Image 1: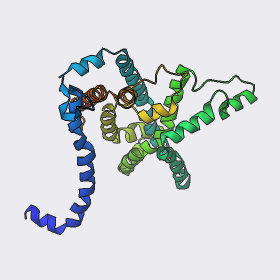
Image 2 (image 1 turned 120 degrees about the horizontal axis):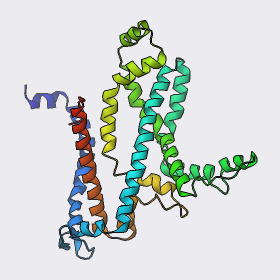
Image 3 (image 1 turned 180 degrees about the horizontal axis):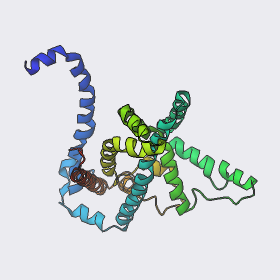
Image 4 (image 1 turned 135 degrees about the vertical axis):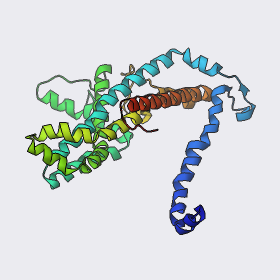
Length: 300
């Protein structure tokens, strides 16, 4: 039976497939022609094709910029710390929820923990300043009422970094547990019964049965997250930044915005975005290769 047979039999499914396929082609592959701006001295008056071709001159310019070094440093710092905390917390949370025996209590907690994922960073940023602001934040008001000293959670660089990481964990950990809980639910119950017979307690089962059983899922998600280590969240930085804290807020996505949208230097912004994407691909390939050498399946 040829392809025609399957097309006639399942034409409704193929028709539905056309919507996401068209989205990927138009919004993912279509804009790739614009990458040529990274190799041109783009002038709006001359247009896309009329601008002068300069090769790697734009890359040499951005690599020489002090802001570039600072942006790379901050992007790596924030994303590595985010990977340590925001990647591990969903695993810990999934293990804890798996140990909860009350179905009703588990469902209520899961719902409450998922909700922050659906809030935009604009809303989260506004809430953060309402709660954590040094001057009128609710948390600092409570601290002062209890006789303590107000803490500049978002008005001092080091405190801002801690707040940035904590807010990121709060926003993402509930949603991240979905995949891990699904993976845990597929574990053979006989493994837990065998561990019980051997005298293993609940934590020993979690360490020796649950974690090894979801190792493939953890490695797969880790590889995917390593590809984003040079990206970062523009919305998250932009929603939480302020004029008092500038040490860690210059990252690659923010610099792309400043150079491209604010300054109108589209060639420089495109070159920086391309550099970021290439490093991300290299990290994914390297992580995949390492995972395979360690005996895991990898992605490719």
